Length: 307
Image 1 (cartoon, rainbow, N blue to C red):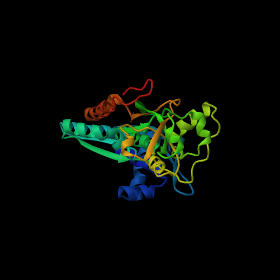
Image 2 (cartoon, rainbow, N blue to C red; image 1 turned 120 degrees about the vertical axis):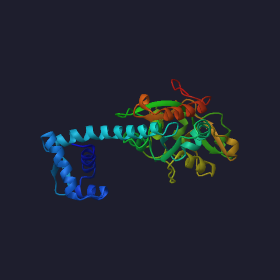
Image 3 (tube, helix red, strand yellow; image 1 turned 60 degrees about the vertical axis):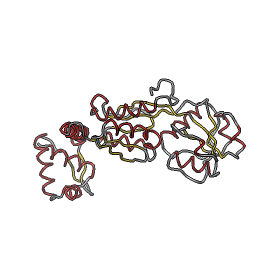
Image 4 (spheres, rainbow, N blue to C red; image 1 turned 180 degrees about the vertical axis):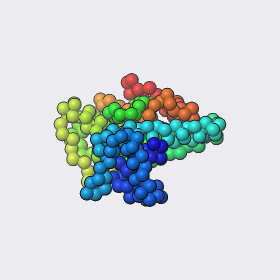
């Protein structure tokens, strides 16, 4: 049994096809089959069963797949960290983020980190949801991911950093722009642009509103959004009000046609880091995360959330 055998087995379980994995690995289907047979001989039990279309893991195969997938992702990450150690002061910090996370949460930190660690590479991978960010951390393609803090995820640590207050974003000429604050109960009467479907931020907001007995949330506008920035832009263009978290450093002076009315009664939205194990992060990754945390220090934070 070798690591390459385990890698091939995990790939077959996830693809459901020997031939597809053979194409990806640049080898023959027979070579992939031989790797699986070596594992079965070592385990003393069948690991795959043929189906009308492709193959699927047996009960024993599912047990091995879960263990091998977790172990391989950790091993791949460890091997990258060993390569970073060989590089001395250099190495690479791999971060998975949302589309606009770097601009809103990390721009100052990137500049500060680059000045202190000029030989460390920063690699940013963009994903569309916290779920995809968790997957990047779980499979070892990233050490760090910036996420909206959500329910526990197996094998992932979530570290809150900053809480974002909720606001109603409206055009300056909207009657609501003169308000000092909006109560959550009033949102039921405002046809606002809502956050992306199935996003953690939307689930958090809807959960807060339902717990307050504020009535049904009004139907969203016909214009859909993929991120917070788009919701803010559409609100500034007058498409409709948008309920969004107030992003760090967002200044209305940069958006003269936009007003942000606080919804102070709602708990702030917690955001922060997702990692496999904080104690196992590379020194460079810890340094980058701590630089981001320090640059965000002073922004408004939620109770119990550290800057």
